[in-house]
Length: 391
Image (cartoon, rainbow, N blue to C red; front, side, top):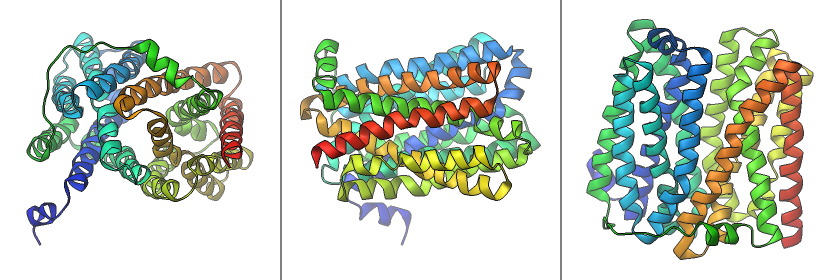
């Protein structure tokens, strides 16, 4: 059976899941190329550590800020009206990164990437929410697994490129694949592309998100979770190196987080469709146990087991967080509510590395990661209480 025959046999919903997950995985591959390439980029463009850090912070903040308007516009116009420009802007951003010959061009390029990712993220998730009303968790689990698949591919691609050619070449396959996925999306999409004036109702959206105590607690629980993820993913290899492990072991352990996540997210989404989502979300306890093991007994076997437990615990939450927000939102405002919630989550995510860095500067990375473990107590407690109230 050829690929064309295989795709022709898929339903429209399944084809949209395939193309949107491919798009997310490809853009995340490009995003995760940046960390391993940063030493070469910094050297080529003469960035200071503070300068390159500020550029990546700008990327994160722009990505967070675009979430709400893109989601809200997709409610009033159509999902495709935001998704297609998201693809185009992402393509422009990755091309600009590859051709960046100065600090200014690089900073502008990563800001463009932040805009494109923001245009794509909430509307694409909202479209899957529209199409898979009975299996949202499963669909979003498959979609969000693209982050981990993309991260694994980025790690291998970076090693290959750094050993054979210039760092700029790493973005060529990203642009090629993303361009192909864009064409595939245009061919398969059935939604109209609409233009019109849209009035944002930020006050109404915020009012819905914090209307009840339950919603406020859920928002806090997932914000703290994203804070944890920001600190963990940016400094996990550094923690291991500071603990006496080699860079190779630290890199392999970091890849293990992605590999475990690629398997965990679809399964977690499916489980959350069959059982109470907040109960499944309380599985964050596994992340606390796994990271505590690494901190208490940092030997190679323990690090391997702890890494897997940590990944299972926190990777489970991504499809659940999006689905919980969607289910609480009215159908005609789902994209806006999701975008606003993700803006809050991603802002908390951006704070995580800063807090870990400051604590590590004053004490050490082990202490900083104990703070991360402790922060999860808030999320676990709130999610467990929400489940108890509903049961």
